[in-house]
Length: 162
Ligand SMILES: CCCCC/C=C\C/C=C\C/C=C\C/C=C\CCCC(=O)SCCNC(=O)CCNC(=O)[C@H](O)C(C)(C)COP(=O)(O)OP(=O)(O)OC[C@H]1O[C@@H](n2cnc3c(N)ncnc32)[C@H](O)[C@@H]1OP(=O)(O)O
Image 1 (cartoon, rainbow, N blue to C red):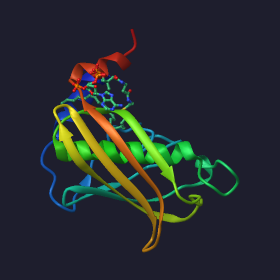
Image 2: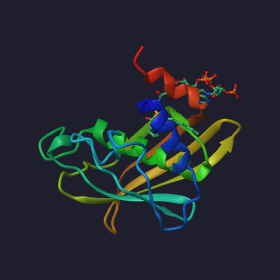
Image 3: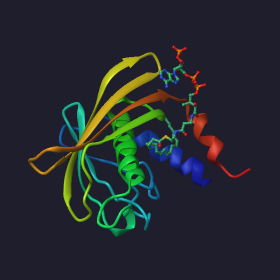
């Protein structure tokens, strides 16, 4: 079995119904944001809570921008991937067409943040999503909105070596 075939087989399994409160599976083992086997990754763990997905996250020195502060691109990576977990609730693959991040305050390395994301509207293939990142029990430090577009499985063949 090719690595793509293995990925597809596993991907279908990931779309089974997930109970409220369940930990959701990583997109794949090397995913930059959630893959457990990516040494550069964020190792994001995400749970379903009702129709939302939630994560707690600590950025570290691998994600540094200005000294002591997370790189804005790293913050965007985590938001983008968190949106990708909503696909387990909506039931099929989709990809980011548009991602907008609002940075309210610096995201400090070594600090634990709470993240939550939800689908706000669907329109045909279009999934409109919103997310926020907050200090534990505290104020918002960033928020994001995204448009994902549903795609067929063949979309992912574009990444296979030719
Ligand atoms: C079931 C088996 C599944 C198997 C999957 C297998 C393997 C997967 C393995 C791993 C996956 C891992 C992770 C995935 C999950 C999460 C990770 C985070 C997410 C990402 O990291 S993902 C990567 C970054 N992402 C891309 O790499 C996308 C590149 N891009 C494209 O591939 C195309 O761009 C595409 C396909 C997106 C669209 O192309 P397209 O040709 O299909 O669609 P088109 O452009 O025509 O737009 C259709 C309708 O959206 C409207 N529209 C467009 N833009 C708009 C805007 N800005 N505002 C408002 N409306 C807009 C149009 O106006 C039209 O509207 P209407 O239909 O009403 O006319």
